[in-house]
Image 1 (cartoon, rainbow, N blue to C red):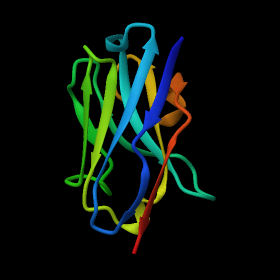
Image 2: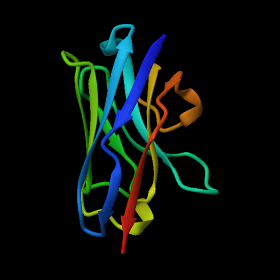
Image 3: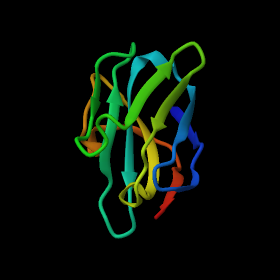
Length: 123
């Protein structure tokens, strides 16, 4: 079992930035590829970014490429997502997920999820 807890969400004006964190506990963090997903009201959970077990590779959704940066610190069992140049379309609950094997943009391939952190971007 892997337990994941997200933090760092909040309300921010358009153009602002946040740093989301995901703290992992349980099994060895470096055994898992990690991903960030988001879900807006009435919409399906969508891929944001993913990172391999040792920090590579990293992949991003086209909608966030160049604005968001995913990273991990295996010594601290922490996953991060730096989100810059936010716009109202980024408003959603952001979730981190863990999966055995390589990176994936498919949420059904993730084994463990956190409870999510809300990001709200005002115009």
